[in-house]
Length: 516
Image (cartoon, rainbow, N blue to C red; front, side):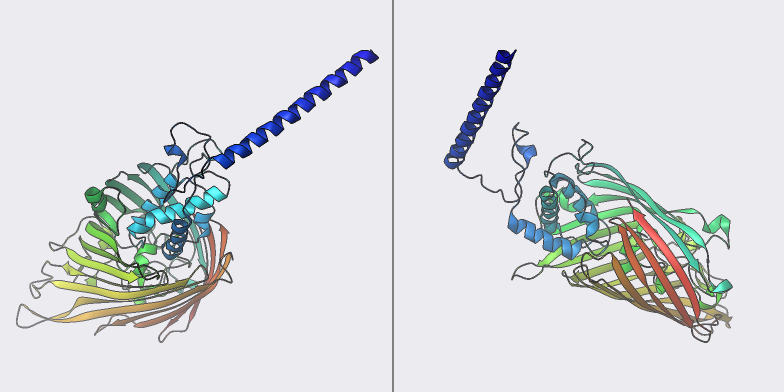
């Protein structure tokens, strides 16, 4: 027995010594091979393992540092206007998947992603996934390829945002809990895509449950990508597309922020707010309710105006559209009726929007006008009534620390005062409703989850004679925002309403928004 044990120990020692020698020989051979083999050159953008012949164990892709740096600058310039950077930086996708995501974001109305920035931004985000330990084309932890890896296909999206508002007593319109939601789906092809979005009505439910608590169609449109149709997928300094169907009319900066997962207060700006106001019967309607969805067609595009000289690129976006427009009667526009899908006007409305700016600052202007009642009001007033809405806006930001937004808009509406002799004549006036707001949000640093927010709202109404008791309203809003996760935000606000000639009204609100 002792002899057998001695022989076994000797055998183990021999095998161990042989294994050590074999490992040493392999290390030496690998070192010599590395010295003799030339370095692998870095591709201009990325060396994608999907494009490798059949070697699935080839090394992970390498990214051009200059392209990554350009992509980081473009990401901070264009992709943090609507949501926090953390929402994108905490996700891991392949380069192919990030291309699809960035293209989809760039196609949204109000997006400020230049066509030439799509590839740099996708490369930058893919490089973060690569450094985090996931190959740029590796499957996720579930073993399945990223669902966004395909440029074409169907995807769903949504925002669930429960809202609570309290205080102010019976003077507050819709003073209770409300589950605000945006839900939709999109099919995307290389040239043609389609998008459908529905929302819960942004009005309260107490006044008229049968009408105000309904589900409304925000978008149902088909998009034709003209730039891709003409140039293919080649990099370019411009993009152009056409939307046809029902879409959010691009008026003002806030029109691109109407999704409750984007704007960062409990309620919308006063001049765009319909359904969450105070003493509604006395202050009247806003300049334009948001979202303002209508049927028609829109030409959309963007272009890079200046990208040389070591400065941030200056880009321009533009929208030109024809839609059914607003509807009304002799006493002015009826915004509730304007939400219907069928117009009562024979003449459509025309409008447009343009913006220009760079990473730090952007300026925009908008206009829309047309007839809201082109049928004779009465035998005494055979004329038609028109409206014109125009405005301008400015936004500025510094990284993810400071964000500032200002917007002004005015609506001029024909208003029938009374019929007059002789027959066929009438006394008319123009109702002028204007408003503006300043909004500022500040964080201690880029990584901070907390943000302090303040906003000043003003709205003024000028019409003679006026059936309304209050012609001017000011509102102060301040609050705290907390990023619960990378795709959710909790907002706590105190609104101080100060109608002229009326004591101030305090409204408290809380809102939680989660997107998927």
